[in-house]
Image (cartoon, rainbow, N blue to C red; front, side):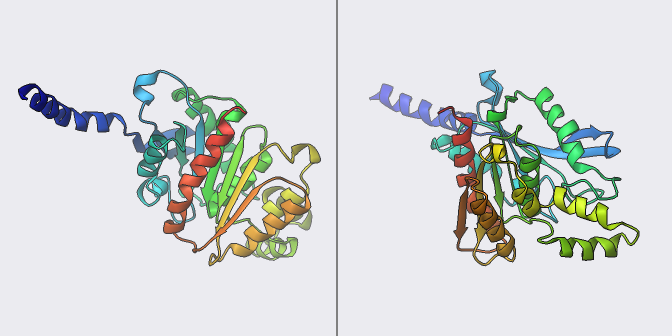
Amino acid sequence: MKKSISAVIAFLLLSPIILLAQTGKVYDNLVVPSKILKSDRKFAIYLPPDYETSGRSYPVLYLLHGAGDDQTGWVQFGEVLNITDKAIANGSSTSMIIVMPDANTGRRGYFNDIKGDWNYEDFFFKELMPFVEKKYRTKTDKRSRAIAGLSMGGGGTFVYALHHPELFSSACPLSAYLGFLSLSDAQTALKKANPNMDDAAITNYYNTQNVLPLLNNMPDAQKKAVNWYIDCGDDDFLYEGNSLAHIAMRKKDIPHEFRIRNGGHTWTYWREALPKVLEFVTDSFHQH
C-alpha cells in the first residue's frame, strides 16, 4: 500500500513537469535587421513543444496579422500558443514553427508601395524568410512551407502565394482584404493619393498587386501549384471580395476550399478558424 501511495505522490509531483514539456514557446519581441526597409523589423515565433529536445527540422507556417495589430496580434488575441499546442496534442496538427511578422510599423501593409519607397514584400522574401530559415530549424522545401493570415494579412497571404507559388504548399486567407476590386477603384484612390502618377503605372500596380487580376491572369500551369483554403464570415464587411475571389477561382478551375461560417470580422471568428488552418496546412505538409 505504501508503495502505491508513493507512486501516486511521485506521479503528481512529476505531472507539472510532464505538462510543461508538452507546451510550446512563443517569443514575441524578436528582431530582424532590414536593409530594404532601413530599420529593425520585429517578429514573433511559435516553437513546438519538442523543438528544444528533438534536434529535427520542422515545417513552417507564416501567419500574418491584420491592420491595427502587429506581430503580437496572433499571440495575444489569436491565442496561437494555446490553440496550436492543443492541435498538436490531439493529432490534428503536426509540430510546426509559426512565424508572425510585424507589418504595422513605419507603414501599414505587406505590399510594395506603388512609389517604390517602401518594399515590404521584398523584405519578407529577401530578408525575413532567409533570416528565419538560417536561425531556426525549418524545412526549406516548398512542401514544408505554408502561409495564412487575417484581413490585411489575408490579402498578404493571397498576394504572396500568387506571386510565389513555388515557395508555398498551401495558403489560407481568412476574411481577406483583396485590395482594389476593380481598375476604376484603383485609379480613383491611387490618383487621389498620387496626383502625378500616370495611368500606365496605376494599371500595372493594380494588375500585379491586387488579388482579382492576379487570379484572373493566373497561368494554367499554376492552377494546382498551391492548396487554397479561404474562409470568411457571413457578416463580414469583406464578404463581397472573398466571394468574388471564390467565383474567379471557380471560373478559372483553380482548386480551392471555400468556407462561409456564421460570424463577422472578429477575433472570435479567427480563433475558431485557426485549428482548421493548422489541420489544412498539416495535410499539405504530409506526403501522400
